[in-house]
Amino acid sequence: MMKYSETTLQTWTAPLSQTEEDRIENTIKMIKDAIRSHNELSLMTYEIFAQGSYANNTNVRQNSDIDICVMLTSTFFGNYEDGTSASDYGFSDGSVSFSDFRKYVIDALRDKFGYSNVTVGNKCIDIDANSYHVNADVVPALLYKDYKIIHSKDPARYVEGIKFCSQDGKWIVNYPKEHIKNGKEKNNKTNYCYKKLVRIMKHIRNNMVSEGLINGDIITSFLVECLVWNVNNSYITKYDTWNETLKESIAFLWNEINEGRAKSWGEVSERLYLFHSGRKWDQDSAKQFLNKMYNYLEY
Image (cartoon, rainbow, N blue to C red; front, side, top):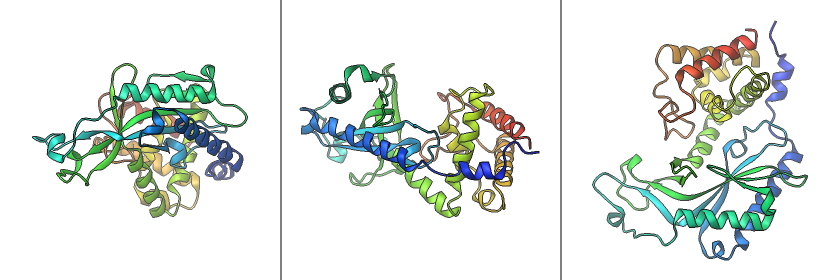
């Protein structure tokens, strides 16, 4: 007998409720107001956008937190073709350092939400939730113009990402808008089932973490989404029930890893490899998770 009924899995395919959506929108508005009201930041050019599970419409937890990027655009990082530099593209050094920008964002959020409600973490700035807004993780970053990844020498042609430095001194590059775009495309190609399957697997992952069966710091929500991204579309669309889809998708992923075909898997952005040094997870931990989930679901 399967652990979860088809009705339960169908329920888990649903996105956030309208009440949660309203609280999230209130949070985003308050963050925008905070940045806009700051003296130094008001003179800069920046963009504020949601990223992560909420932006990708794969969020499942009630009272979910959201990831917000505050991206400086008037000063940016560039990744240029080998043998070239910023001057070859017509750029000059910016006037604002990342550390200064990050400090301004922290000050702005503390002015808006209260000093005690804003905690500075290694990578992001955490804003505590209340009845009006949800918990938010704010990432200050600079625009990252990646020319090298597409071998471009045209200043106007680049892949957009973000770049920021963690408190422990590590520079991090991500491509959140590429993630959002690709996720929408796969969802369309799978008759809107891709994101539903992601939500189902995230619910199961959360339950397994709560029951102490897996380590949630290693098997992250992001990893789950990226694993489903690497499931062939035919496995997501060919079966009549969610239990069949779930069972066959888990088996597909396990077999691909086991047979050595997962080394080149990408994140949803397809700009970074899913399995590379520096990750919390590796192919073995992902394979073990898939095996545990398969058994957990009593398939």
